Image (cartoon, rainbow over all chains, first blue to last red; front, side):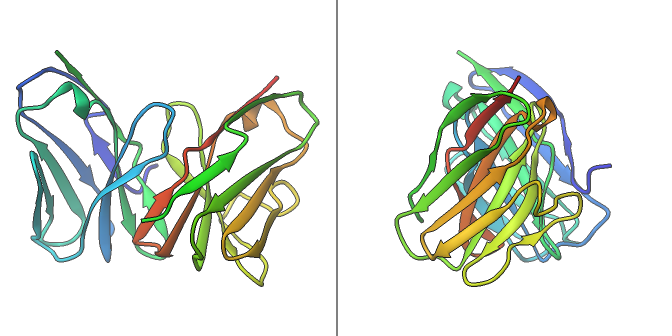
Length: 108
Length: 113
């Protein structure tokens, strides 16, 4: 059983569409990170959220940390083919735990 | 951020043999971590490589199977010993000032036949 559940597991959309991916847990985390991993590369840190209810924006990406610090969401506006990749959330409690990821494909 | 390189980038090995993976960082870092990413799955922490002391292994991973060296603040190695096909995976090192901010290397893709 994954400590962090990510949904959906796979997502294929057309360029220009909006999407939201979710990261849920029954555990409370001191912080939560989102990473993007492209084929043949290691994960790249996108953002760290620390405070319950926190919202961070990174260009077309909006990250939200749940009030109880158990869940998070990533919303992408007007997706582009360059957004294609594996999106991983990771929570820190007594160590860093990764979700299984959402594999996003944006078709031109 | 830090620039991290790993060698080899990929390898194909015979079962029963061992492979040592190197991780080099362009700056001195306190914490280095080794992860495994099996096909289609997420990252699983193998161990934390501490400079000047023994590595700290996560549940399910043992030193005899995955010996780690950390001779200085910019370098670490992970050895996958007595390999079997189940060890086929991507092995990633990461570095960070703390667990919350980690930067990953490009990974080593291992296939065991």
